[in-house]
Image 1 (cartoon, rainbow, N blue to C red):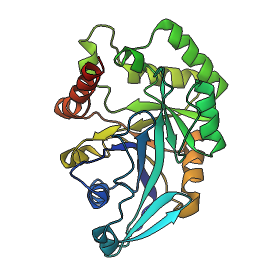
Image 2: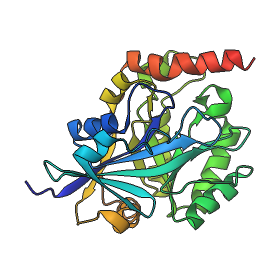
Image 3: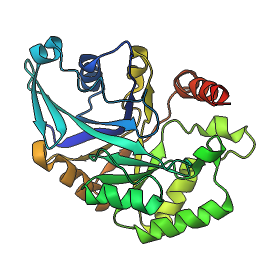
Length: 276
């Protein structure tokens, strides 16, 4: 059956020393009917790594034809002919964790000090820049940003309008955030800012795949763009063109409470306690 659209979840975080491999990721993509997945490592934390993506074992090669095109990995299912793509990148933050950016299709971002330098380097490397959960503050345990930061966010978005997208996050559960002091519906605020400035909003699952069971929520959020034979060297340019021309269909949803607590909240709290 011919496909007339292309589905991609732009934010998936694989973990080192997990109980799954590359074949499990590809099988999960097929099960969720995803054509592409943005696989992102952290620039500040080694356990969120692309190591598992790069392990091309015998089982992967037995089931898929593998092709590396401009650093993006394409897998053709030998039985069905279905082509899957893994777009490699990073989630990048300065040392003070002021904000997070998704660098889709660009690796080894070295400009960590200034926000503008991070954005400029991703753009210089022809990556897609996505402002990750812009209203959830990493410096405040992901509570809402302050009014001062809102003003700075507005200016950054004005400056880079047409070059960056904003992210709608599948982990920012509004029912949970509603009962916590200083937390708010950050996805709603992101949509309001985007509408005000005319900036695209892309939903991502933000899946933190600590173990194999968590792969089941892959594709909770994704975007769907018109299919136009965009595989191989064209994928990133067509993706960016579709996003910045607003020629895509967003699919938004939230992960479950149980997944959020097991995949993110509990590990995050433990890491903060360990750091003192």
